[in-house]
Length: 309
Figure 1 (cartoon, rainbow, N blue to C red):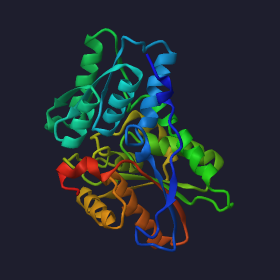
Figure 2 (figure 1 turned 120 degrees about the vertical axis):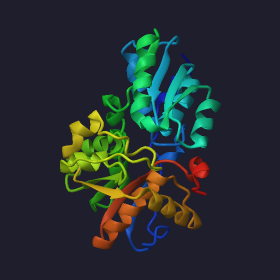
Figure 3 (figure 1 turned 135 degrees about the vertical axis):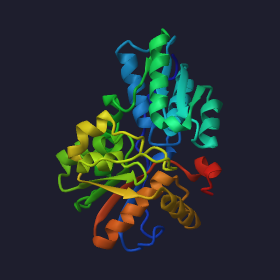
Figure 4 (figure 1 turned 60 degrees about the horizontal axis):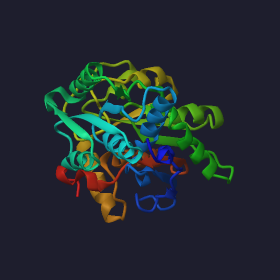
């Protein structure tokens, strides 16, 4: 392997966004995670999980890294593996954006598309079959890998270090798929900033994290808020749901419309980030003096084929 320094993920800028989202006097910030090498926050868990595999002796220069994805993690896996000299095989539902397919292929990874009617579950099963039937393959298994959530400890530490005025952070808001971002960050916030409310954002058409939090059943319907609503709560979410104070649901079409509006104000972000803004606004209406930190996961350019911009 080569260039293992590419496994190191820096802390990204934290910027004030109140004016752009329509609350010019608010105390609201976003972490620009789309500035990572892979173009999203997924560089954090992918780098950590691969690094852990190398240190455990499970990954060497002959290993092919395998995982299921709805796109962002797959792009990070493909780009990071290329940067350090590893092969990658990604399995993804067929109804994801063309841009994500193209970016994975451009990074040199093998991409297998599963029937969209099986959504993520079929991709998970296919990735597992590939791993089990091929020697020298390593399954990251992001929805259950503890390295996923652990990687977001540094995100939370970076947020806490950014603010030096003594005013507490009232809310941390992040969309939830595997729930690794909110659970990993919560593990730090609950220890060092216990008054910070941890808010997860889920998609209303498949609200697995919301249902888990409230002990409710739910029905999965196809949606475009990729990275959320996989059809079942992940092991990470199940283990860490007690750290999440509340889960809000959003309509995926409204998240896209929010992104289109924000583009006019100079913020070009993907729909899960738009969902974060939707809930940020909702909380500001209730508590206009709150200090809120959210995350901009990726950029709008990855969703043009789905009508975002």
